[in-house]
Length: 94
Image: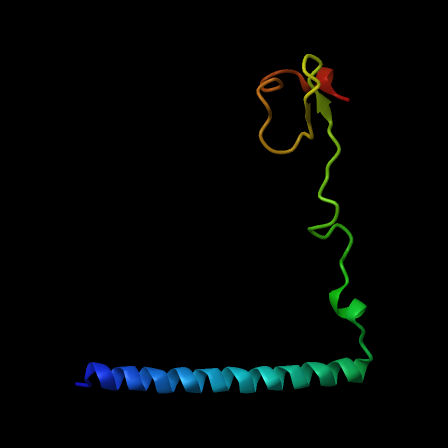
């Protein structure tokens, strides 16, 4: 059975080997990506363009319902507020 100090030394050696392997594989991946980019004449817009309706666009949804008593609004998404819960929503439409 290995001693505590021997195990720590082994771990240190493994950590070093892991770090070197990550650096090697990362460099290899970057080289492959650059080769593909050059081969197909790709641009940053080709690689990182946003599609229509992608998450993170405006994020705002127009309100659909309004509480006539307070002016409070609700989009119709998520849990309904107390003032409209269980009621006919057509009378609250904006």
